[in-house]
Length: 106
Image 1: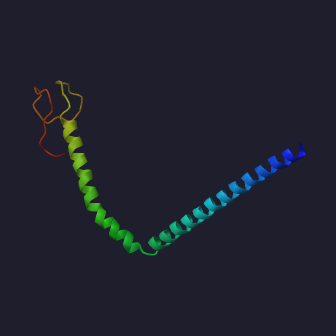
Image 2 (image 1 turned 135 degrees about the vertical axis):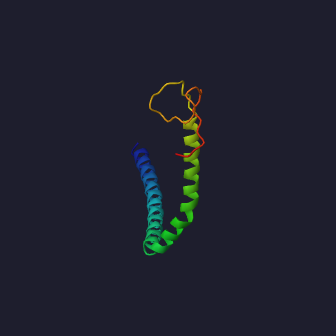
Image 3 (image 1 turned 30 degrees about the horizontal axis):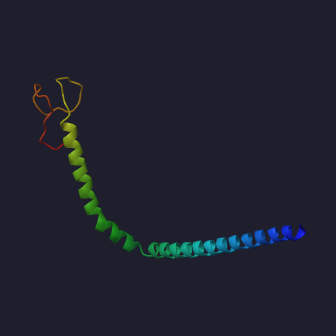
């Protein structure tokens, strides 16, 4: 019976040791990843021209997309039913129109 307990303890110790080795390996990998990220951050911080260049490169396409989304949203807003009510909302067409129609940009 004592041998059985010792065998169980030995198996548990082996399992614990394997788990510790796995965790140690994972921590080592995380340290390498953190160091790599830190190195990249330092590189970017030391080169503000790179950040400015990237920003200038992507600013125009992003602005274009944003403006197109705003235009579509405004067109959809302007085509909301008016129902002849004067609620202080945007009105560009005749009062008899079922829909507000605008071709002008606000």
